[in-house]
Image 1 (tube, rainbow, N blue to C red):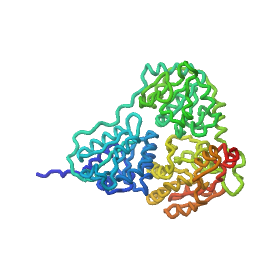
Image 2 (cartoon, rainbow, N blue to C red):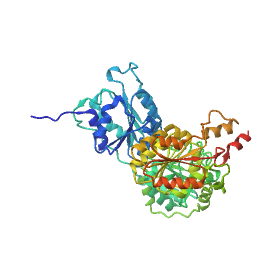
Image 3 (cartoon, rainbow, N blue to C red):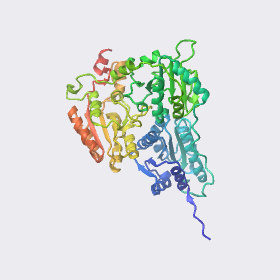
Image 4 (cartoon, rainbow, N blue to C red):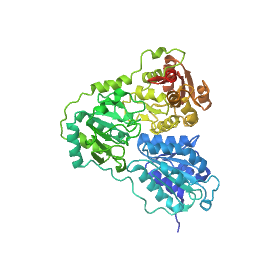
Length: 557
């Protein structure tokens, strides 16, 4: 009588991952989870992506999940690997992105002895995840993995970390008999709640909607609600693709350095509907908006969120609704109501003015590009449905204002402000959407942090485009120092660096540009290339933001 041989815990775990629709694991392979990487490599419907640094692996996993709404796996070995991985996990936490994290740990018998590279990973990761645990029995690994997927994808999504001693994945275990269930049902908008929201929105004089990442899968319904109630729509911080920017009801992006003209409608509103946004510090402009109309007067804010823990945390609300954004917005859009017309054309025009570059940027003096000219070149040449992966840095202010997000799922950007995000995010986006144009936009600082992932792109044959604003400094910190201190410290980056040569050394194509014509030619060639391309755009370091120059800030002190 033959018996089926028992499989390893790693093989059973991979079955659980694949069964949940998870398709990739991003990692720097480590000795503490050898069997996991082997099991993924041997499986036909999953892909193991080896990266050059753990931060790149975690950014890739976060970007894939943000783009498709399903988790990806990031894996790292104990101590040093787990430390390097943490930046992308923190990004996933602040961005409400589902992620499954496996952290290799020292062997079970060595736990608690400060063994080689041992760190208390549960304590380390607890503040930056929804749930973190250390598994000490191999036969519990499939069960814990299934639970991790459920936690990561239910309510407010986020990362979950599982620390696994190095001797567990290779143990052979009996097939699991029962596993935790999948994603719980998404709650709809209740009839009573709908009946309260509809007359409130219809009866307001100046209603606006603030839409965050939770509304990303509800774009069509969001447009219908805005049009049904003639309500203006703001995009939360780095969620610009949640609503078509060329729509006449679009009021702008609640980002850093938001223009006063864009904020004007928020000062005049008598109804604010917040949908799928945790109302972060940046979105609220330092927790100033939205605000009650007056002391003792009922707040004009209603908030719809999948997570009850987010409702009313930042500002008082007259109605808080726990519901999935798409289902809630569809219910509001279908409500039998006629709302009066409100003219948001002047507000839309005010936003559009801030998104229009000043005259003369094409002929910027000094043999360097004006940052606005780089964004203008991108708009001239690149398809408007390109996936834009943007890094942190002052260059991004020009991108946030200048690029028009007309299509869904076209922006990958960390609300955590993590530098080094763009290049790894572009690698993941191209793996997920191989037929779309994918563009990483970064400064020289961010590029030098994770630009080595160009090797990953070249090895995997991914023709991403990387546009680098090279101005020779950490621009955001330089701006703050100049404005607040009247001098700078520690912000210089040696240069101009031969970033094109750096990229070629990693197997990519490259070009250095310092004029709009050169930029257009380089972008056009990159669109036709079959390999990754880095475009080193030499920009004027004095143009530090859309509204300031370094020389002007220093002279004001």
